[in-house]
Image (cartoon, rainbow, N blue to C red; front, side, top):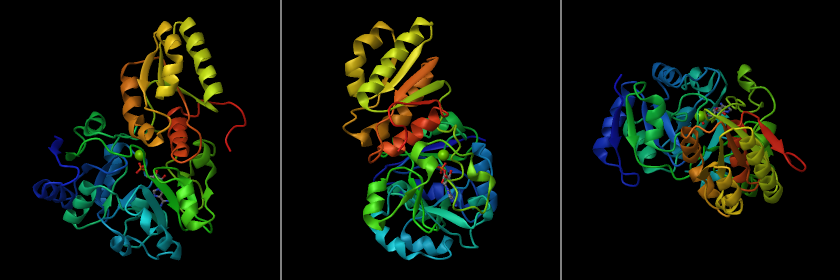
Length: 368
Ligand code: AMP
Ligand code: MG
């Protein structure tokens, strides 16, 4: 299969491009498109054959359910069996990087939900994504547009690096603004439950819903075995939250803790590893790089910058692209640290922990 790329205006998508892409969706094909979080790999959510194509192209296990993307909340009734009252409190976060797990309508193929009686839905805040869903006149199931387990794509080039020759079309709308995936919130559990931290923070949800639980795996990015084995167990941690995920080719070691002790740990690792002849790469914020610069230069560490830790949105925006760039420079070991658990910090910690395949050192008290 030849993968076609069409350039599209991220803010005012050209009607002809959307029509061409919608045509592929309606014929049961696969279209990668930008959302505000990461690039999605879309297919008609109501066509089981098209949905099977997503799993095949990504090499994604059938136990890992897909998020269904809608143009607006009015489309909820197409895919959701029953709307919980708590939904009304979340309207100002929609559209946005928030995925809701709700009772699945029988119209949605079981494969979309990996056999569950729930369905995950989201309204993306991106003109291309919404324009495509409207033009296709159907909800679009779309996981991240990468090979299963790889780092999620935030540019069309990232999509092509993983999926060229395996999908019909990529809409290139430039880099995605948020840069990490949506928050997955289960509204079918007795207390609303974050299954995956993401672009909407715990505090934002608590402000609207009161009590909100965080699934243990979502708090630390690691822990219990994958819940994908229990198709009807909707209360369990999010399926697909495999420990090794968003992973670079090269080994990543993560340190979690306050900035000063974490920097001391990083410095000691750089010294120890280079003394062993290991090529070290570091994925760090600007403040860390400024403080560690002499040591990093002396040990010829490969450096990728994430931006200032005063702006976690910038760090989220840069994370996956910087990880891919560093990985391409082939360090034998990549070192990184976390950015706390406030706001986007929880989601950053989750993605870094899983990119590290659980290779995490906790300084101080460990996960809260
Ligand atoms: P991705 O689109 O690749 O970011 O992955 C979608 C993720 O959403 C899955 O891996 C799950 O963690 C979560 N998810 C999707 N559907 C459900 C569901 N019905 N119940 C719980 N979690 C879900
Ligand atoms: Mg994914």
